[in-house]
Image (cartoon, rainbow, N blue to C red; front, side, top):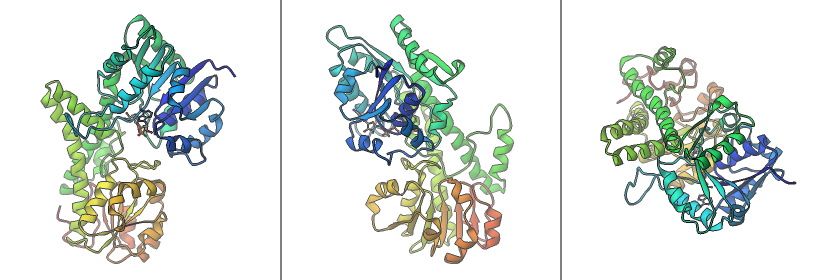
Length: 464
Ligand SMILES: NC(=O)c1ccc[n+]([C@@H]2O[C@H](COP(=O)([O-])OP(=O)(O)OC[C@H]3O[C@@H](n4cnc5c(N)ncnc54)[C@H](O)[C@@H]3O)[C@@H](O)[C@H]2O)c1
């Protein structure tokens, strides 16, 4: 069958796989191919067990795979055959050299640009889907402009705003699609071509266009603003714990102001995931680079409050359990960085587990989707941790439960049954404020929420 457009995506990760599946699903007359340097990832995309868990993804893959969606390993050949190339490779924080710990590591992106240059035999539109520092397109353009002969490349920025856990719903009904381009004749033409693809299912008023630098910067700023709201509410949760105010009541009262809004005002143990921290640190680096130290310090404090919240949570466990965790069994309920994903990258659970292990606690980890990734993250602590998917078996014989992910199933657990199987006095540390605290206290637990008074039978509640 002859397809109207041939689209390639380089990078078959959490963004590349789902976003291309949605394009293939909505544009049956386009052929969409996804490639990756990791052949095992491609095999997984072609198998029954996809490498990414997202509600609704399985169904869309079943409807499109091998029809107009393909996962392939021959990157060079695919570059030759496709006209529109999305780049969705990872852009982690640099761990070496200048900017280590803050700047984005662009080596994967640059390798991709060079590969596109080397194997292209016809003009291409190259689209940055990865999250990148502002001005990266300039580097891309310079590499691609070194093409000998007449091949032309147009670089666009089309950052992805989907959130893991709701990726398919976000991709199907995005708040907005942002497309940035050079404002030249050829740039505007390429921009229009990409607008046409999204216009198949996204209402015109939700497809916004801008200059390429605004587009690159908007993605970093969007993530920084979301994370800043989390840190803002979490900073106030600390004050609530000192003053007997209740953070849920404060958040509701503040969020009902339509200028503020209620979303992303949920207290907890802080944000995780592969993006927020790395993107804020990238923003911090850019601000410092341009001599804006005050601005850099402002945004860096968002990350510091996030770390503080996790430190407070573990200090509270230690203080409440009589200042020793040595030999005590603690059951961690939830290891993914948020519900409805198996992704554990930068999950607060990693940091909290390590802190508990440092206190010589025995840790049992339970999670419906993330145990495989948890075992990889904590491979260096092998032997000190048990991994048990069933929450009832995991909690049995433990001294405390620590709820670290807001999985729906934890709201509905039979805490009476769990209480019976635990060592007494039994503790619950609800790091996401998702269970009925009063009910658990009445069952017999000592309950420690975030940002509200503890329900405890002991007078000296914690050292924090
Ligand atoms: N995960 C999210 O929720 C999310 C949301 C929006 C934006 N982003 C951004 O999207 C980008 C990708 O994120 P992700 O979560 O999909 O990362 P990921 O690590 O899951 O996937 C990236 C993939 O790119 C592959 N890759 C790296 N270099 C390659 C090369 N030269 N050729 C072919 N393949 C290569 C890797 O093997 C990997 O499979 C990042 O910049 C991220 O910041 C992520």
